[in-house]
Image 1 (cartoon, helix red, strand yellow):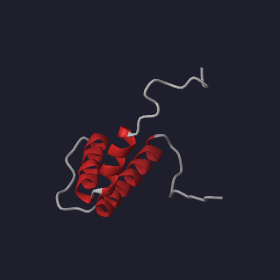
Image 2 (image 1 turned 180 degrees about the vertical axis):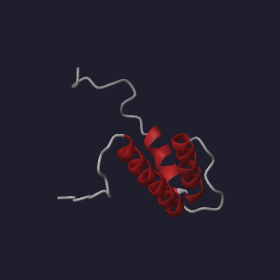
Image 3 (image 1 turned 60 degrees about the vertical axis):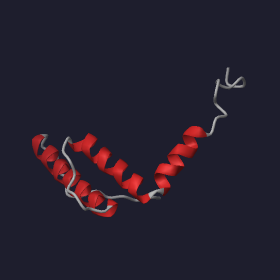
Image 4 (image 1 turned 120 degrees about the vertical axis):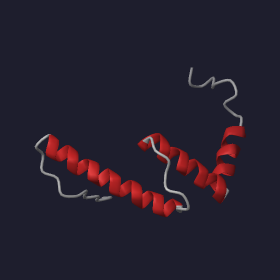
Length: 84
């Protein structure tokens, strides 16, 4: 099964479309704004860069972690990311 491949598996149109979206700053921002809407069910603030939207999202997620920790009686202070 794995050796036979899938019909259309060698097509590159999806990859090329994704690259087009990622490389065009306006299209990329439009996608980021849409993903923000999907996550929070509200329209993101206008005239914000991708970095600013990430910062807003990060603050909202941090607030949610704090609320969930309180609700379930868990101690939480911050996220510790160690790539090793």
